[in-house]
Length: 203
Image 1 (spheres, rainbow, N blue to C red):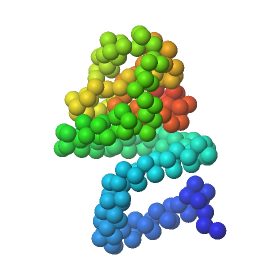
Image 2 (image 1 turned 90 degrees about the vertical axis):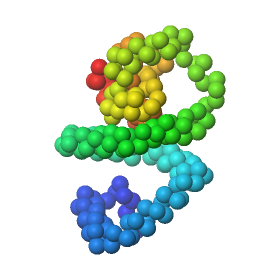
Image 3 (image 1 turned 120 degrees about the horizontal axis):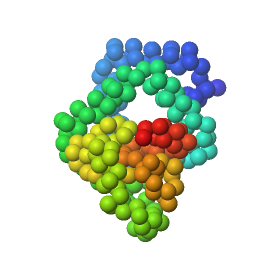
């Protein structure tokens, strides 16, 4: 029986990765065809919705997988800090080359387009003190920079989100609030224990 990707030994995963890398190096046209095919497939909103639903269902049924992924990513970044720097540099370059990308991406995942959209009345669950004045104070404190990926508001062409580190909307103490870009804020919806520990150590 074929093993699931998370059940394979490190040796098998390494051999598989090396084999794929060698094949794509020898047949670059295959990667281009696959990339074009995937791009066309995910341009269909229905296909993206199906994928998101499938991933959410899978992680709900197998919470240990998300933990393995986060642990692996955390370990990798601890052992290879240059990786995070390269990723940040790559994102910075992309947004510099495509100044309208941030606004377009935000429009795609904002409001009812967001996977966790809960209706126009959702914000009423936030306390009154979590207002725009407080959010702007937090953004000023964080130099209008996402505290995870380090992208700035002017690069994203939108205001940063203000995230509750402990996920308690009623806890609006400044040390419990942090500035995140929309993409990083979405990421914190998963594996909350990891993000509470990580973001709690930023301030």
